[in-house]
Image 1: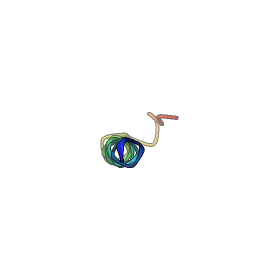
Image 2: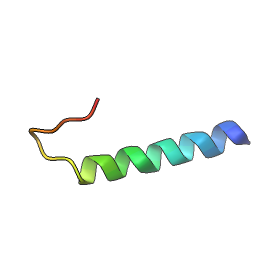
Image 3: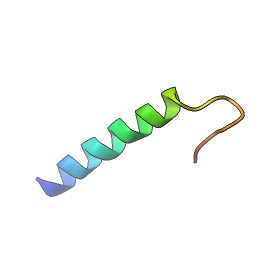
Image 4: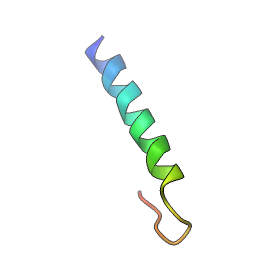
Length: 28
């Protein structure tokens, strides 16, 4: 359960980061 929630939060944060990131500011 915890792993699933963590993965969900990580994915959400990752997607938000992509939306807020320009092509010159790629976040690995």
